[in-house]
Image (cartoon, rainbow, N blue to C red; front, side, top):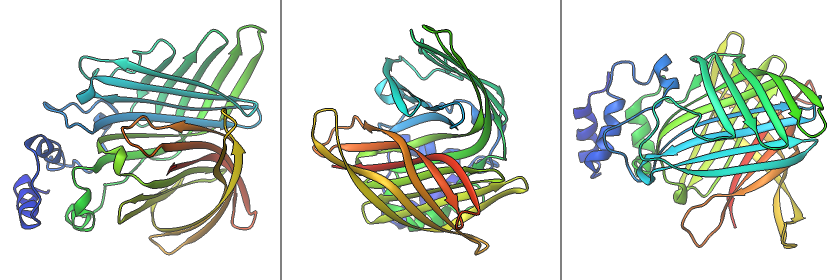
Length: 347
């Protein structure tokens, strides 16, 4: 078990001076089994004093091509700023219906995800089952998200000092606990005006992260959660200044395998935005993925539909997250899948 004194000594040797508030966060990883995923990690992580870039978020998606319904949703808490961001993007027959809300909160709600009148989450069983809902004047969505494979925790099993050594200049800027999990989603989408009801039965994905994320320092990323009949392939490649962070995992019924390297080729397309301006966005990509056992996967992806979401951060350069629903092909068409390919870039 790592001791906080060891971390402080490491920081001192590297000439890193950290605010006492940040040391509160580092103390978390000195707890017994802190890097091992626990049931209590599904819930809120509350500390006495929060950092300016502290956030905690829960994210879910599902892709149902047969029903013509896809959903991406996220609830995040930013206690230092006394705010919560709520997002729902409901794609119906490839057309996005976007709901974004900024809520004021005096303090971080403990284990509650129902503060917004439209988007609500309910944890039924840790790492196993959630109930999710969205409702406005036109639609009522009710689904159950159940685990398909075991969750994957990014920091579990790593040497924390090797991690600090490699990314020493990111300490205090991008230090988060983070896990993801593939699932199966069932439920209904009701059209209030017509009475139409569509049945949802498909694959989905989720993640949960907490800690420090300074959006301004992120230059670019590509994250995918590709769902295939017998596996989920998840990768992220993030550029922060001179740092390149590559991570991911392969989930199967017998467990998770960490990804060691990813090479990405992306083709862009031009399009007209809502103001008639010509913009560019990713259209398709090829991912060459290697896991820690030297197994290799080649995934081809192509955008089916998407929405571009500006990130509200104070900067002269606009940061865009392109949330894209993709079709995926694995290893020369040996398997087909669906999922999300998310791109962050600056314009």
